[in-house]
Structure formats: structure tokens, C-alpha cells
Image (tube, rainbow, N blue to C red):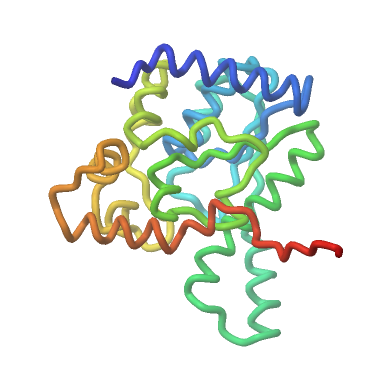
Length: 245
């Protein structure tokens, strides 16, 4: 039931309308990892705004084994880009925090790089007359597979209501080669794929999101649990509502 031509055209128009209201003449600025989400987001922004108004930021943390894919993407789309290695800043903050509070938790170490990348991305965006594109998709958001105040934020989000399979369909429709659309996503930390870390496949997750059907009860329960405990990542910060008498 997913009409990729119709939906893609609607997203393209939505991006154009959003920029007219929220940044007329501004550029779309986004982090380029070489994965499907940043690749498809970049491609659809090019379709909507033209390649001259899309700026990619590659942000390796020291050595990045697959940075050649990210470089191939910006070349394929013919967009302007920069490479900013966050290693020095990452190491500096790691040392400063450890000096201040002792050993960092495993989760804080994992989340630090995405948060530094987002701070870097906003620094570039504000220097390039830009608006930051969020590159998350519905499947990952559903189970909280993102870092709060890291890759989960941005100024506009073209893909966050589409499942992984739907994002891939959009990418193929836009003419992206398979190396960008079908690249197996990994965490870039321990050599595991996203699906290894999640404990289920994106195909199972996508089907459950769209149909409510999951044949494996254990997988269903895990998806439900991850969805429930990670809802806060997609919500605004709770605020005490003061009502003057």
C-alpha cells in the first residue's frame, strides 16, 4: 500500500514549504555517515532544494572504517561538504569528565560522540545559513535507537514517520545506488549490527509497527518494552505549569 512515488513527491513538497516558512533561502545541513538514513535524507533534500542548498558534514571520531561510503555519497549527489574529525574534542571531554566525576558509565561513553556530533552540526549550520536535518526513521525512533540531544534532534525531519523498509523504497526511487540504501547498519563501536543490538530484525519491527502483528511473542514483548521505556526521547521536556491565581 506504500505509494513511493506519491509519498516522495509529498515529502519533497513538505520540505520546500517548511523552508519557505522557517528559513527562506537557507541551506539544509546534515551529518553524513554513509548509512541509509543520512543518504536518503540528503537525496530527498537535494530533490527538494537543489544540490546547491544541501551541505554535508562528515564527522569521524578518529578513524572511520566506512568513511569511503560517506565520501562516495556526497560525490554521487554532487553536494558541498566538509570533514570535521571530532576525536580531539571527544577525548578532551572524556578526560575532563573523568577528572571531574571519575569513570564514565558505558552508556554515557556511547552517547557522547552523537552529542558532540550534533553540537558540531549546529555550529556548522549556524555558520552556513543552515537548518539542521534530522535523519531518524520511525523504526529506530519506535524502540529508542537514538541518542537524546544527539542524532534524535534537528530542525526538520523528513523521514521520522517512515519505517526502515519505506526509507529504503524512497532511496531506491530517488535513484540511490544499493551501496547507500542497503548498507547493513552498525553501531560503529563494538562491531555489532543494529539488529544484533536490538535482538530482532527491522523486518519484524516494521511489520509490527504497520500491522500490529508479530508472530514471535518474545520479540513482541521486547519491542513493546523498548517502545514504552523510550517514549520520553520523542517528547518535550516536562515543565511545571504555574498558573497565577
